[in-house]
Image 1 (tube, helix red, strand yellow):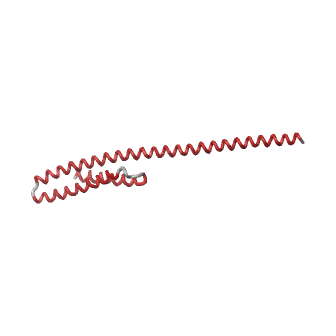
Image 2 (spheres, helix red, strand yellow):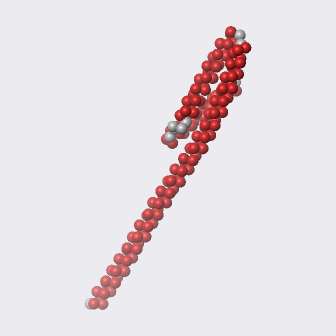
Image 3 (tube, rainbow, N blue to C red):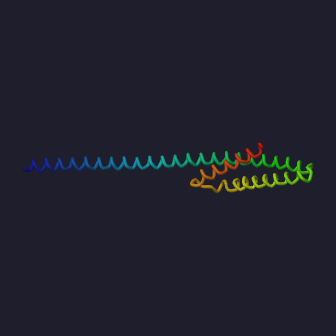
Length: 141
């Protein structure tokens, strides 16, 4: 009977050790998985932030170029207004007002550029690019 009790005790003790070590391995594995997931999320966030920053810089450059183009066109229109007849002046004054309105829209986009957060960024970027393209197209005419 002593041998049987000793044998059962040994089996139970070995089983507890096995279960405890498996449980610890499972905990370690779960912890590593959570850490990996956290690292992946941080990497994705960092990548998105870097992309958004690059997009903002590119958009700033596009806006600045478009505003510079509008300024150049405004100078050109002012010269034409100075040389124009009364009938032509009205046409050029109207064109100047259109250009000033376009410039104001671009300036508004410039001013709001840094405030845009990730959730509204894509819509803002698309809208601003459309404004820049409209101005470029308008200046080519």
